[in-house]
Length: 444
Ligand code: HEC
Ligand code: HEC
Image (cartoon, rainbow, N blue to C red; front, side):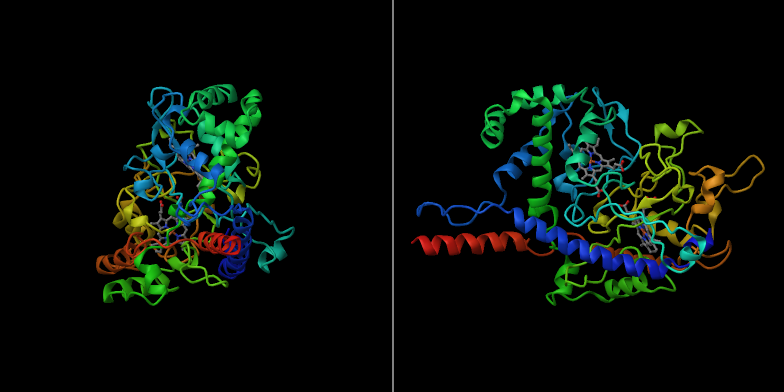
């Protein structure tokens, strides 16, 4: 296993470049589809609408609880706009289904920042062990969800609509029947054509396209309004504690957090997202709060299933989950894919004490031995990362950070909360505004 991970750091650097390239591509794609608008009548404000017609329809769909079997659950119920598009509560997994009594199996990730900058899933596997040793291999990265199984937002959006633990619709017909009864049905016809509801599949597909447009166009998903953004732009100074926290976060010999949660600007100057979109097994302890875990044979193996099924053959990838962004992480009440931790402090303590004091995190077996990495079947526990700092220590050694260090890192992570300065208009919007202004000027 350590052979597989030996060239880890170097491979991460290569991937970071790839992420930067992908960012440029997605940003360009967004600009290309920003619809050109006719000049408004003189009496109307010349500020262009923030969202295109399709995206504003998508916003209504995103927020509509009537599109669920319960009639009480929308996308926004789990991805709460008031909580950085993450969960509004501390539940390890949300309750959904027709009666809102079925528990999901994973924590709700934030939709903030990542939607328009997630690279497509890539999984380049070296043909030989020699190549693996020489960096020709690269670890899997990209795709949406904790296991990267969706490459587009419109495909992703179908999943919660039909998942029995979430919005629990029976079939396309059920969703489209709800859309036809929606207060915005007339607008749906206006945007997609009078006959749009004739084909259930087409109507559903267009509805998901609308959700996707909303997710890509809505500036609220990526306001870049944190203190850290202001700091990067030279408009704010970090306190001594925040700066110290940042150093610990960056220090390869201690926290090493930035090797996966990237905090440097991209090659194109883009502000960092605090993720490299790669996959990693951290050995987060099993969470008894999840009902699925009552079955001792049930394991969520991330890339290997049970939800994702197409790459399960590669046993080296079992237990790996996608690195989440840490923007707004200090506003969360639930952490990691299985929601095992409920405070940021506990999550940070886990990183630095997982190996120095495993008995604190994992249960004991019948013989009194600590079962490290108990949320994976024994045969797959070797996939857990034990080569990247701070995950390399031995029981009894000193943790990479003490409580005072953790205070400082928490102070630093809080600078990633949005709302420090007024949200700015996104580049795409400013471009659209300029275009509209120019058009208006030439018509006058
Ligand atoms: C019951 C709670 C719930 C509802 C309702 C819900 N989601 Fe999610 N969402 C989740 C969970 C949990 C995940 C992680 C899923 C996984 O890893 O398998 C997720 C993942 C996502 C992701 C991937 C984010 C990333 O960074 O990879 C997107 C995008 C998303 N949801 C959009 C939506 C949309 C659009 C809707 C409405 C059609 C919706 N969600 C409804 C709980 C929910
Ligand atoms: C080797 C890559 C890697 C390193 C190094 C790393 N992380 Fe992570 N981080 C991940 C992955 C992968 C996850 C999700 C794992 C899971 O849920 O099973 C994660 C999850 C988290 C979460 C939970 C976020 C959420 O939304 O649930 C926090 C907080 C976090 N990391 C902070 C840190 C800090 C602080 C450090 C430095 C001590 C660090 N990470 C180092 C890869 C890494």
